[in-house]
Length: 85
Image (tube, helix red, strand yellow):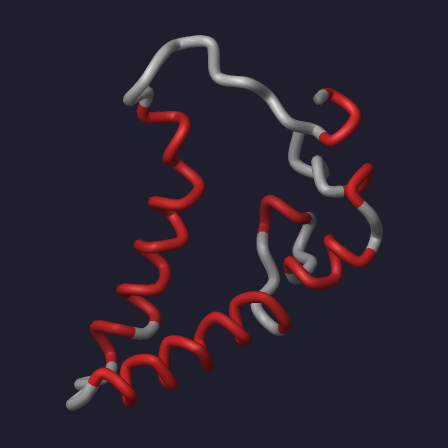
């Protein structure tokens, strides 16, 4: 597991740190996309959120990835994904 930079949670179910990364993603999605656009239909929301996720992965630099996009960090290989550690 350490070769892939994965840490197994040893604190049991419901530990807040287990969800911190996905919660941060949802917060960014809400404040940078959902709250700024008044999507009228589900298909509009799906398209708008899809565009935001594409932007998030391909154009938006992330401080935890040394100002790289997730796509740039991923292309460097799994051994390089633990940049912030």
